[in-house]
Length: 255
Image (tube, rainbow, N blue to C red):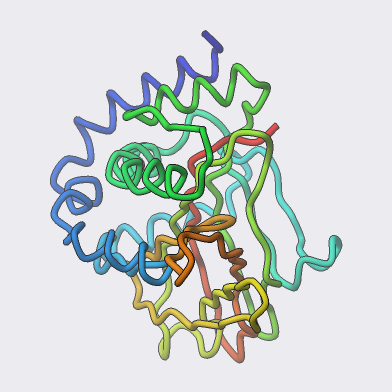
């Protein structure tokens, strides 16, 4: 068992003691029947009010720190857009580890159902720790949760967060800033590329503390001749003013 995995196990124990009754318990109280229905019908779903204002401020305040991160990416240097983001290092902050574990547990039935519908043989274990061990055994041992920061004129090009052979098909992004007060513009955007049809765009409205769960790569859609796959990409439109902070939770690790 890798040392990174052992650190993650310790962090999960601590989370249960320190954030019970806050963000992690809030996940269990969401209307998961509606969320699953939205994911199946649209490829995305809004998770309302998961983080408190204090939790949003606390997470956003981590960004300037030098410790706790494994790398910083300036998007313009790579043609990704404008703005920047930082990947956390292990051990993850307790609230992030707790959210990663709790959200995975709710989303894994959807992920397995999608793969079955699309004829993909891969199935995901019930617990996130087992899936992370699968990633680490395959050489995907770098953590992928991240903080993103946008200023005026910044944006994120449409993309997919694929980091290796093992990919969990759903991810979650939390908005840590308040639209209309902290920033203008900067909408979360999804596009769905359907076979032999033009792409379908969708803007997902979020408030501070809300999250959006969405397909990483593709999802199944029922057609007149059976089930078929559609390809999704996501991004952020141009920020007109202010500062926008986001927490991204990706459930597979990177090689």
